[in-house]
Image (spheres, rainbow, N blue to C red):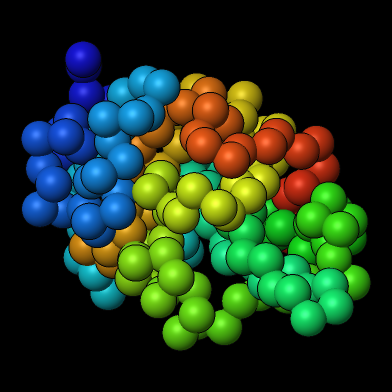
Length: 182
């Protein structure tokens, strides 16, 4: 397994560096349908724009994972949306419709952290609770390799889009990621 060349980061097989991963992410690695690499970063640079600038990783080579709370009646369902960093998840349209919710919004930070077992700003679809739907934009699924969170703010994963699309609970949706207005 040859380490990827992505930005200025030094990548290692993720299974060799569980110390860089949140516990649920490390636990999920053996079940992945393909390779995953990890690179250590400065946790102050975990946010997408700062990360890309500091480490030379373009937005189209990164994906953001956002946690959504979808409500219908008295029920709330948590779901993850994975979109390219150059787009934003269509939460009030496609996500709400797909989940059959009356209302959908970003989950509160404390809920996302507590329920995922991951750090805010590092939440990744790898290792999320099995009950969560993982909505993956078609552009993410088609990508050769993408940088995503590692469950912590101190590292990033590099994973093929096909591996992300094959995660438990994953559904690939065309148009999930909407272009960011200029």
